[in-house]
Image 1 (cartoon, rainbow, N blue to C red):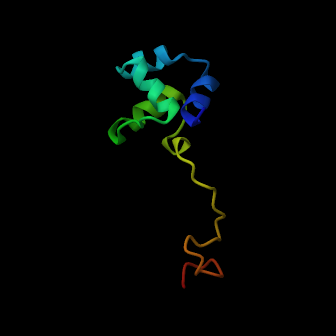
Image 2 (cartoon, rainbow, N blue to C red):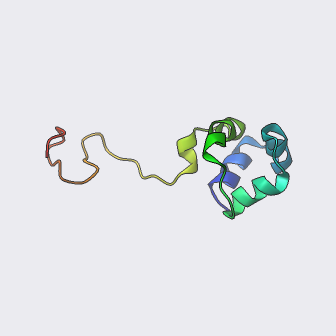
Length: 81
């Protein structure tokens, strides 16, 4: 199971209900949940509303501390390398 299935089940909604709201086939929702397909980028806001989450919740992005540099070169957290 992936993030889509977890998020949908958290809302207590069925694949059919999500599909109807978004105007897609139930098989499309099933493909998202099995990792066979991913929603189109322009549809992500509507998909997030249907799943009751934010777009970022669909992605596996580790949380980052405020002072931590993305590239690891900013050792003191002031934004200067």
